[in-house]
Every structure is written in C-alpha cells, then in structure tokens.
Length: 631
Image (cartoon, rainbow, N blue to C red; front, side, top):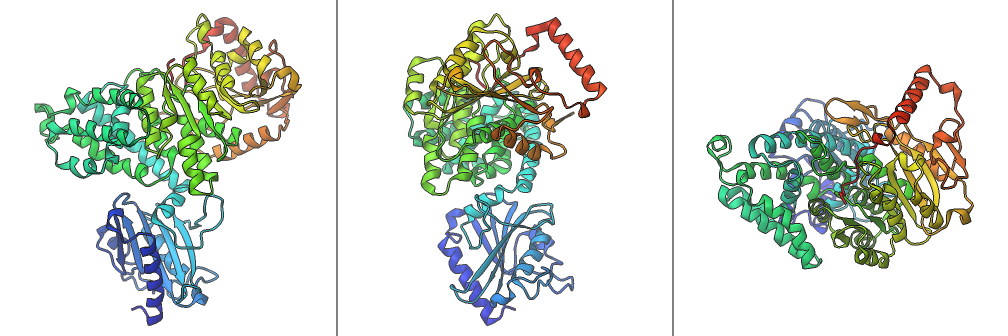
C-alpha cells in the first residue's frame, strides 16, 4: 500500500500528466493505476512482485495508447529523493529507478517500455529519470533527446514516443515487423484482389491518407462492402482539400486513387471471396493497414520506417521488378546523401527526380533531428523540401508520403525536370542542397537522356556554392561525353565514390556517387577531387530480403566513410585526391595506391574478369535505375 508521502509524489505525477493532456479522451490514452485490465500486461506482471515472492506486482501508473498497443509508459514513485536510485539498480522495493526498471524488464518481453522513476514529495524537489527498454530486450538505456542530452522531466506522450523511435533497437524491431507485414499484405492483395503492380503502393498510401480522416477511421469497419471504395476516395479527397496547395495539384494527386476506387475486385465480394471475407477484400486490406502500419504514421515521427515499407513492398511484386519504371534508391544510400551534405535546419533540399520522395524524406528526418524549436520543425516541413516528379503515379506516391509526414507536399511539382516554368519557380526558392538518382539511359543512343544532363540540370538550379550529390552509372565517370565539359565549365567536381557493385541488386547497374559544388567553375577552383573506394558497405545478399545489413556493420562503415570524405583523408586502398579534367577518368580505381597487404588472388581475378567483360560488352552493362522518375 502507498504511504501518505508516496501519494503526494503520485499527485505530482498526476498533475504533470494532466498538464500534458494525458487524461484528455480524444488522445486515446489509457492510464491505469496499480493494476491493469489488459490481459497481456496482467500475465507479464503476474509474477513481478518486487519482494521476489512470485506474486503479481504493479507500478504506480501504466500508460497505454490505442494508436500503438505495443508501447507502454510505466511510472514508479518514491517520496524521498535519497531513494531515487541505488548504486547497483537491484533494490526495487526501496528505490524508484530500480522499481521502474524491474517492471519494465518484465513487460519488455512483449512491449517497448518507457520506464519513468519519480522521487520527491514537492514540485521543487521532484527528481525524474527516464529509461527505455526495447521490446525483446533486457538492455536499459537512458532516454535522450535529439541532441543527446538525457531527459530529466516528465514530458508529453508524443515526445516520449518520438524520442523512443530514434532508438536503433526500437527502430530495428519495428522495421522487421513491417517487413513481415509487407510480405503478408502483398500476398493478400495479389491472391485475393489481383491489383496491378503499379497500383499496389498507391492502394497502401491512399489507405494511409484515408485513415488520417477521423470520420473514415471511425466508420469504415461498419460500412457495407459496396460503399467502402466511394468512402475511401472521399476521405482522401477531404484530406487533400485541407492541404494548402493549388487545386490542379490536388486533382493530379487524386486521379491515380480514382482508378483504385472503381476497381472491380475491391467492391462487393464474389462467390470465391465472400466466404473468407464477407465484407469484401478491401475492408480486410484497410483493417490490416490500420492495425499494422497506421501506428507508425500516426504517432511516430520516424520517417525512414515508412519509406522502408514502400521499398520492401515493391520487392514482392510478382514478375517484373520494375513495374513502376523505377529502381528505388536503397534507404541507406538516401541516408548517406544526407550525411555527405550534412543537412540541417538551414538546408533547402531539391530532388528533380523525386520518385517516392526517398531522398527528401531522409533529408527531412536528419534536418528535424537537428531542429531545436517548433518553428524550425514547421519551417523544414513547409519550406525546405523541394521536388519534381514527372510520372503521375509516382508523384501521387511522393506527395502522399510527404502529407503523411505532416507537410512538404506544397513544394512538389508534377512535371518534367526540363520544364522551364517549373525550373524558374524552383530557382526562386534558392535551394542549397541537391540530391539526385536520375533515370538511367537504357542505351548509349539515348544521348538526350544521358544521366549527366540531369546532373547538370540539378546543379544549375542550386545556389552558387551549394552541394549537389548524384548517384549515376560508373560509365558517367569513365566514358567520354560532351556534357562532362559543360559540367566542369560551371561547377566543381568535389568528390566521386565508387559504390558496391550489387548496390541495386537485382538490377545489374554498377554506380558511383558524384559530389559537386554548384556555380564554381572547376578550373577556377583549382581543387583536387577526392576519390573514395566505397565498394563494401557490409550488406550481404539474402534469399528473401535482398541486400541487408545482416551483421549490423553498416553504421560503423557509414561513419568512417563520411568522416574520410569530410576531412578529405587519403588511405592506401581506400581513397586518394587527384586533379582531373573532363578528359580524365573520375574514379578511385584510376588513381588509388593499392594496399597490397589486403590484396588476394581472388580480388585480382575479379578485377581482370570485370575488365574483360567491360571491354567486351561496354555500354551494355548499364541497366535502368533511379529514385522513381521515368522522365
């Protein structure tokens, strides 16, 4: 039983929770005190007594939310600040921190738990510690904010949720859950609804936007099958109507969703599906997306996870892997671009072949992490992400992706990136970072569509001195082309990194990353170009998941690469600096000193074989791939 003084501490906690809106019914939060009616929690705490007698035990407060049922916050209170934390964390009866972690570890078998320890019986003396225990883990981590400082207050539910989402273990668990779900959803859509490959991602993104509409979210479960499609489209339209963007742009976005809204297999169930899904397949799809994906969108400010969902979903397309005319930029490459550019709240990022918005979303995530005020966060979402996408369906996906993240869609244009009017409008906004994965020319006869023309177009849009980054086929770095001279006449080639040969697996394009400084002629800058040999990102090919960071080595490789680039470090076998002109080869292999201590016979044989194949087949080696545009 709580002592009188402990009740004072509990009252202080209640006051804080009221202040932050935890008790407001519309927030969907449930607060239980020293008990729980949730069966799973009851089971996990059935032997969690702090005195080790094997009886049930409960913290002072257990907070859950229907928006994400796999996340809990628990509070443990002590009146005496001297009893805040023991040196060994193993006295749960006496100390607040020890008690909070004791319960969290029991609950973490099935939940991600935020454990809050509070001591003190007056507001001025109150001491607060916050810890995170990721689901499936026994490891406890002090909760930190975006700048890495420990959180020492009770904060709002959304802030707890957002900060928990930055934890790599929490993100990894959610990512693996999403991977499993994306496969399951693909199977359902493919076998029961027979939706075309290019419409599947639109079905998902449209549903997520429809779920933003509160009336649809509340009523779709009780709608008859024949009314679902119409209500779904109406919900999307209402959410688009709220957006502060021109009507023509809203109409462009709505068009691809209108096609799905009349798809015959999503209406009333036929004799084959009626038994299994009496309310229709579409309702089943919406319910599963609502349960499995909506929580990430609705509360987590964690953009990469949902971007991952789109990418993974496309992997399960039956038949043609390039059904949308795209090869999505791998997520870790989009992240690498943001780190190379060192984006922050002052950056204004442009992608002229935006695709599903992967680069813009990654940049937004990194920019928001560095933002300090709410004004900065709002400015980033509304004004600092600019995109052009030509394909209407891809544009709808990209715009939906931005809407789901709270804004950014107003600065997306559905047009060719060579449209003078659009380019004029973009230049007025003064972008200072460019990111690009252009459409890859299908053959070298596609001279007008050469990848470097897209690079030039991007750089010409940027402010003088801005950084522009592009991932292009390695042929752009080694094969003569008139556009190379044009590029160097106006811009400086700052760096080129040779990327892993199977980066775009299963598509066979070998690529490099080029980093340019816009508006500074290469000859005038008289600068050596830095060349990196970034052939091994630690990812391995797997049968069902494609290339993945199976051994969790990517973060350390990434950090080393970025540090080497920023400091222009030179290491044998890894990097080199060299003065080059448009006539030279732009790749590390041409200038790098070999680190013979690491060379094996196998390495030698691979290089000789690849060179022989290149000489034999030449330009045929390049395939198509881009971040989503099919200009």
